[in-house]
Length: 463
Image 1: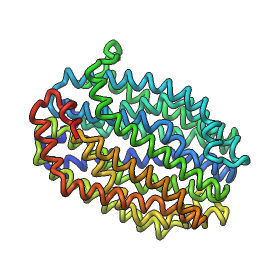
Image 2: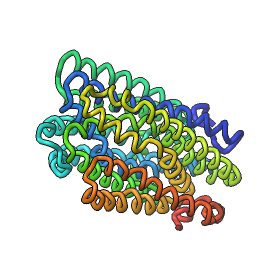
Image 3: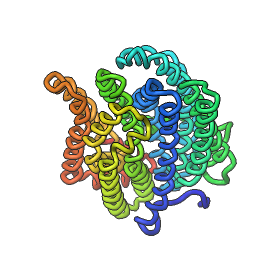
Image 4: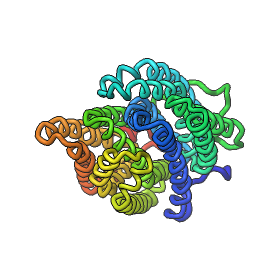
């Protein structure tokens, strides 16, 4: 096995998971710095209109890219299972199919994002004073959408084979590049809010190219070759089987979050700036959730491929406990330091007050978000992506939107919108806990996997 990859099927469960999760965690820290610095820079050097334009970007950007990233997650699970089973020929077909898929959808996303931005922003009720800067930011951002898609594809491949270090190295470099370009374009040259998106696009392109060059030159079974980048029918079917539920889940939940953002917009520019500032900080709070979710999916996928069933149970317990504990510690710190943290992005008193109120309503419930995401990651790794899809669509989309629609008629306050998150996280956690404790999902996954490891995709898709 190549030294850059890590088999999660051998050795200490906690050690192998932490060695994989820590670079993912650090990478997510830099990814969040990457996203947050745009908001900090424009908020401090341009003003609240620009801050509102950038800060409200998260839900729209996530809506546009989340479906394809969900399918990329499916590709990672497929690759991890073949890697764990040491079926390298089939693994390479999956890798090259995933890259071909990313190239096609990256182009589609770029065109759609640039064309649909004004329509979606109007639909979201973006205030007139923020609208021109929002359009400029989003359009420049989506010029680099193909880089976002391809970076996630490449990172998914590397994570699937246990290499979480190289994506970290490339992300660190591109983060500092983004910060330097932001300062140059916005603070020094005064090019405006669109230039912050240009800085992000350039940096994302660099990180994607660095990942691709690494995969082209690595001496390992997962090496990428130009001539092999094409669609392999069976591999594409497996990727879609694993990834489509996650893609649908991500995109529909993203639409629900756009509805939430639309309601936040209705409370004015100060609410947009304050809540948008929180959304940047929230990304840091979710880092333990994200890194253990990714680690659990890869761990479960590799160990099911290798038929190391006892390790799966130990790894799940360790990952869930660590993620929930860390998330709640961060939630407590966020509650205590909320005014100071929001004040990093804006000096407007009303924005700080509303952002603090929003943050303190949500942050003590981070452990529930961690639990839901971890169990969803485990189920995806076990070949049961439809379970988290249905649960999260019901709770985080249908119920969340219904709650906001009804509750605002009786309590037309920003806190009513804020409570949508803790309430729906609680509901999904209860459902996941019941399923996790009552249903014999682990045993059924093992049985399906044992029947035919070579055709695990078909077996794993049975719900």
